[in-house]
Image 1 (tube, rainbow, N blue to C red):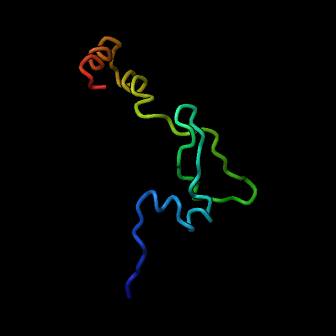
Image 2: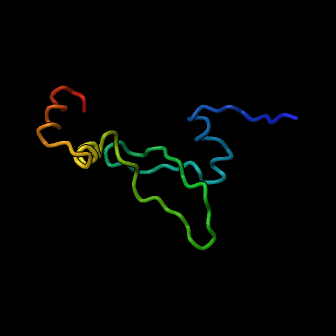
Image 3: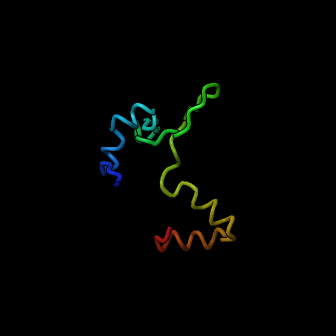
Length: 86
């Protein structure tokens, strides 16, 4: 016995009949980018519908907050920005 399945690119998977039928491929409105392709929930509940209200955060959207929580000072962050490390 062997299991066979098609190998799809992310774009092909997003538009596949299976994902569309399961509402697993959705589009979210981003204020800067317009509609953004996103993965919907793999779970479906009869009495608690799942909804997505906003797109995921953009690239490096929380860098400062994360580094500050790790103990970096504002001057250290500024130095990292000058060196284009962040």
